[in-house]
Length: 255
Image (cartoon, rainbow, N blue to C red):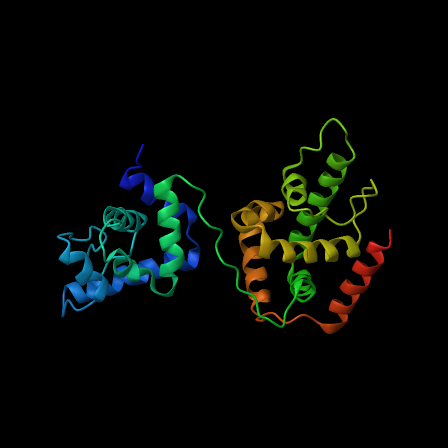
């Protein structure tokens, strides 16, 4: 059964990244200005040529709301069969091609593609993990330590092993550091190497990345931003800490 435009739009908004959503909002604001002025915005012209008055335009001075974003995605979903549909997706700027794949997946009832993850080509998981480890607050480190302790208990319980963080990491063939020994004490090395594990998973876990960072509970949003900044080289890691992480990882592989 074909999916409705509203269902497609709902799915698209749930699957796009914060950056893609911000670009959509920026495009709507630009169209508002053009609509009240020269009306030469390319996306606006494309939409109007199809007899659609974008419901997300609203008033020029108003903020772009969640309703505006949804209404605009509904309009875009209604144009998916139009020959210039990709031109209409120009409202997403440089993200147009990926968002087009998201629309197509949602229309077909398929799983949307994972969002791309940018990382500086000269930076690896040890650089990122060490940088984030050094930037974590005491509260964030305590949350990670508690997550490791809970995962250990679950890992060694043959009747359970249902810890959500443990399950999602092991689905990606990663065993959080320090699981092999059932102990309450989480060492500095355990925390550092787990930060490295998370840096690697950031590149491979796709839409599940947010579920993984839930181990930080109310701090998960800030920690995700730390990883993004570290991956782009905005938070440089101390060379000595990177060397320590590499040494610890080499040592753990021996056992």
